[in-house]
Amino acid sequence: MPNIITEDMIEQAAIELLVSEYAPLHTHINCRTDKPETLPDGTGRSDKKQVVLPEILFAKLCNLNPDIPEETVKRTTDELCLNQAIEMTIAFCVKQGIYLVWVA
Image (cartoon, rainbow, N blue to C red; front, top):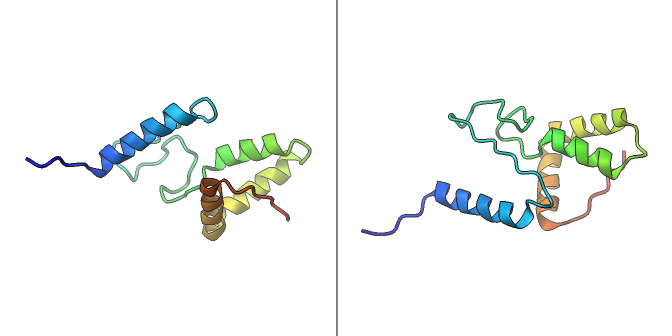
């Protein structure tokens, strides 16, 4: 019988690796739900296709920019999360380790 590797097995292995390597640096969010389309899933997303997690992005932006008023950071976070093209660019840059600067 051939060995079968499912997509779920690959995903679980990737999660285990990420948690073991980066857990001290990042918070792990388990967004699994019984039905894949079910929201809320603990991420704050408005849609399962949403790449950027708005609550985490807001918290990190506030942390990185303590001199900017929270209302401004919140508005910027909302704008970033509404624009799918920007959201995908952010996700790509984060994966590549590219430092982002937002100029409004």
